[in-house]
Length: 96
Image (cartoon, rainbow, N blue to C red; front, top):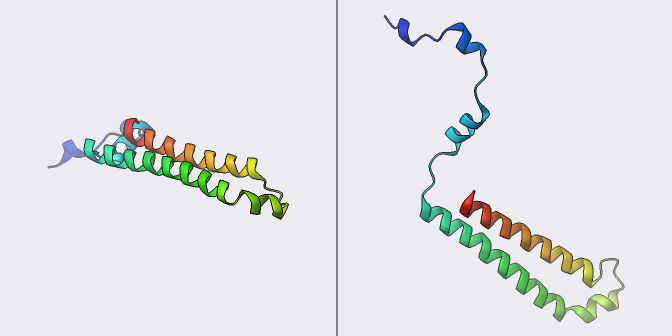
């Protein structure tokens, strides 16, 4: 019968490797998919940084006049952090 397919108690008692499960779940990813996805994230990071800083300069007088708790420096930091996060996603998509 199918006695060869029944695992032993010793193999059932041992937990599966997490790395093995993640590799099985991840599947195959083609090179062109990685290049397009990574390039999209890197392009979005560059666009976010440059357009965010340009819009910040356009609204500089209004921001300073509003006496907001979030000044120019904190807004620049937010734009830079968002752009760095998107760039990291692009690098991760390309290489990792």
